[in-house]
Length: 196
Image 1: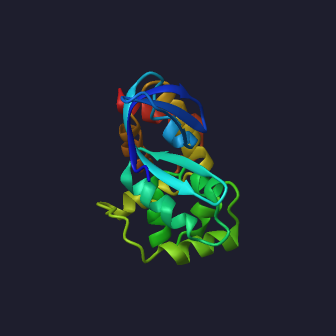
Image 2: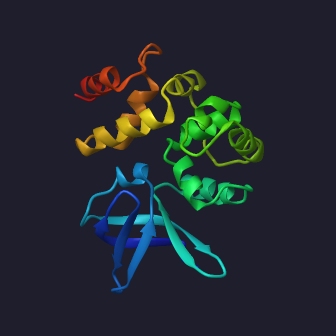
């Protein structure tokens, strides 16, 4: 069972990467766009791995944060949530996702691709009592971040990380957005000004 990998990224796209380890073994690892936005080709990384084993196949999924791996594992236990859906759910910023679950914010989860109202309710029911080790220093700030829908949030983060801004800094500024801001044309310049 593989739990993490370390070494160089030799291939990278939106849904997968290939790692060449220091013992000259190549591993293909599934990722999502949110994780992709944090990585660079030829860089050396330490990535957490979920080793998904079925009767007919073995697949590796990679995560930057251990909390992402833990949530992914719990999502796969939910009836109707396969790995594609679980990876799509994790395209939402992890703290925002857990906040939505804890405060039963169906709308935020419904915005995620392939998730409808019933599935959002099921995800909240299954995850709300789980401890993922994520605390919220400021409930109001995290709540403000929920004014942006999941697709827009991912798109903004992807755009800004492609401009070489740090993802943690981006997340911090997105938490502090004025509530009236709800489109990329307003949010992206605001974040860039805040990071300058």
